[in-house]
Image 1 (cartoon, rainbow, N blue to C red):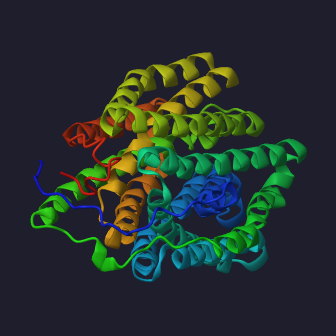
Image 2: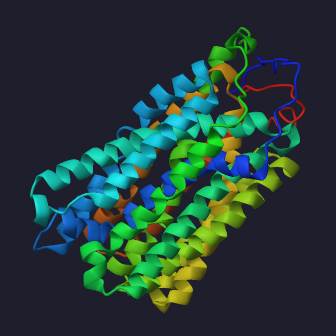
Amino acid sequence: MTSNCRVQVPATGVDPPTLTALQLGAVCAGNALAFYDFLTFSFFAIQIGNAYFPNADPSSSLLWSLGTFAIGFITRPLGALVIGTYGDRRGRKPAMLLSFALMGVAMLGMAALPSYGQIGPLAPVLLVTLRLVQGFALGGEVGPSTAYLLEVAPRHRRGLFVALQNGTQHVAIFVAGLVGWCVATLLSPSEVGAWGWRIAFAVGVLIVPVGLAIRRHLPETLPDPQQATLVPGAAKTARLLIPISFVLLGATTIVTYVLYYMTTYAQDSLHMGISAAFGATLAVATCSIGGALTGGLLADRFGRKPVMLAAAGAMLVLVVPAFSWVLREHSAFALYVATGTLGFLAEVVSVPVVVTITERLPRNIRSRTLGVLYAVAIAACGGSTQYVVKRLIDATESALAPAWYFAVALALGALAMALLRERWPEADRGLITEAQ
């Protein structure tokens, strides 16, 4: 599974540009906004289902809503290919501006879209269309923005800089959970279902003009595409990297989306109130922020592979007992502790995974290759996760089904991690950028 080929890091003659904290925040803001948008839909899946897919059977409405959530993942690979290629040819900055603007348009549409009761069958058609636009935008955001963070990072801080991408995603999800909790607490259930859920999407729109303004003034990192030249044998290495990367990203995606299904799970399977359910989101997001930063720092200190395997092993040991404890105790405390612990460990795994894949890709194809890999894995695994989990719970009549789904995906991911050759600290010393 290894090769002796190496790709030398091109000498650009200049140091990576130094960004202010505000500029770093603007780079991460697009991915954060995308996750705020996507996860807000997930959090209010029950209310959106009732608004756009009214049915006498609440379970049917929820499944239609979750199916629409999954549809948004279909256009992620297309967005990754189109906007990612644009980012490799024209620059990271214009690609990030395009994806961010599209996300803002789609989010505004979600906040204002009339319900089925107001415009009939046109409502779900427009809802699906907006989800497709959202998916296209997010698919095109990940590759250019992650490549940009890696390229502006000092070599010995690549893990930490990429961790900012993951960490700010969870900051956005925390905000989404907090907004959802406020909506659920301050409004009656009928008001939440009628119009309150729209507030969460409207809040997200507010960041779009600020993010666009700051991103316009970012320095560009894309050099001459001819600077990153593959030596003989690199194509074979890349072919080995792609399937391993797909499994790694797919596994971490399933883990993440199972954890963020817990808001719906708490309401639908544990029959908790909506306020308590949103607390699970806050717990996962808070602990995931810490996990992302911890994962980045540990990956820079001890290497990518040891950190991935250690955290994955801990999760495999804990996941089924954690879910069993939640079901036995049936309390908000148990739910928060279990999901928060798993969320922390999930990010300790995820950050080294993303760093490993990104730094092994040549700069001149990094944006689109990373974006497509990520988008295909997310579309295949993430988009279906919550729908599959709900189906498994119904089919098995077991509330432990999410834990077993989580464990199987993670075990496959751990196997892929074991197949990777540890190549740190070579990357931090600038010796290689491609898998070996």
